[in-house]
Length: 135
Image 1 (spheres, rainbow, N blue to C red):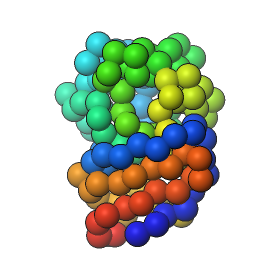
Image 2 (cartoon, helix red, strand yellow):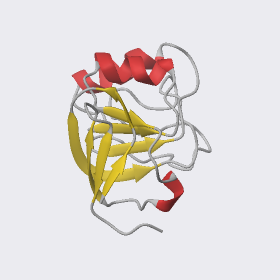
Image 3 (cartoon, rainbow, N blue to C red):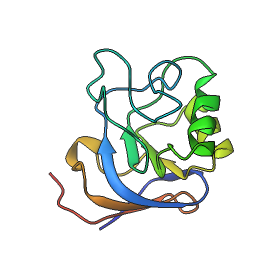
Image 4 (cartoon, rainbow, N blue to C red):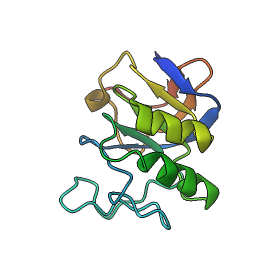
């Protein structure tokens, strides 16, 4: 199924979908050495975002979060793509400098998508190919 959105950071990323119902802070919320979410109480605490298409509502926290995303990309522990409900500058800049494809404003609410489904995110066109059932 093709789902339209808005392209933010160019490129194409393919992998299993990992959906967070809560916003994410990359500064102190994600371990830059491993890609594991370490924020206490976060719904995905202890889960790695490395190699996943990471979908979350929006980023939160310090502007240093952009550099954490860049660092994750440089050390091979970044998500293969990012989907946000609404992109904001911290995550968008991190995705751009880290060369992580990113889209937002998809036409289907994220809560209707399923974790683990293989997806392809095209940051050039703003589209996502979703190979699963919609809830």
